[in-house]
Amino acid sequence: MSAPAREPVGVHSPGRASIAARTLRTDRWWQSPLLTALGLAVFVVYATVRSFVRTAYWVDEYHYLTPFYSPCISDSCVPGASHFGTWVGELPMWIPLGFLVLPFLLGFRLTCYYYRKAYYRSIWMAPPACAVAEPHGRYTGETRLPLIVQNAHRYFFYVALIVSLINSYDAVKAFHGGSGGFGVGLGSLIITVNVLLLWAYTLSCHSCRHVTGGRLKHFSAHPVRYWIWTKISLLNTRHMQLAWTTLGTLMITDFYIMLVASGTISDLRLIN
Image 1 (cartoon, rainbow, N blue to C red):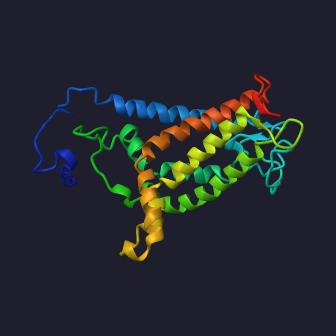
Image 2: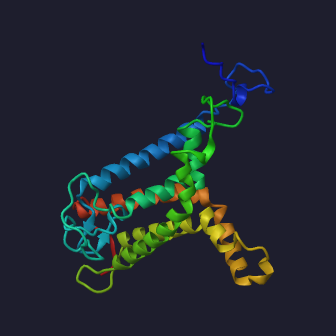
């Protein structure tokens, strides 16, 4: 006995307009998801390669450490790069030196509300654009594996706060003179700008907005938290721009440190 036919779902379900075409749009609706996919792919490829090469990630003279390797806590790290000491021994080549935080940062980015929208549309095609039918026959939302993991975003946010503090410490260490003491170079400024933007991206997160005021029933009874919530809400309106900006500044920061560490260029020194 043959199995009963599955009832169509989604745009082909009963009661929906019967339109055979994938879309009636005549504009270049595919351009936005394509550019998004390419942008994300560029960052993923670059970050993956740089996380595993284990070269040109530390400038000992000025204490520049790339964010892709921070914190560096293994005996495999070059001398001086371990700002917090070495907790583990030598690591095999298939484990990145920044293994302690990279999985959490990846989880924070992947579960971010904006990035969900970005890769749902551009990679998963659910849907690829407004008024464009998605190719999937069924949609279970974020109720089953693997998408149920998206609900862990708030926990990744807490770890991201700790990582931001670590990055801030790295930025402070980067104000080191070539002959010791205080110094300022172009690398110091690039690292600092990157850290400030990472803080802005982290604090503009929807989870941060919820933590500061999402559970309050009466704002008038919590004026301080209400003030913080309003500032976070304003920052939250720039979350998409910050999501893309920080991808760019992470690559720029790492690339500049790589050039200086490899001896390709010299750091432009402003003080000492």
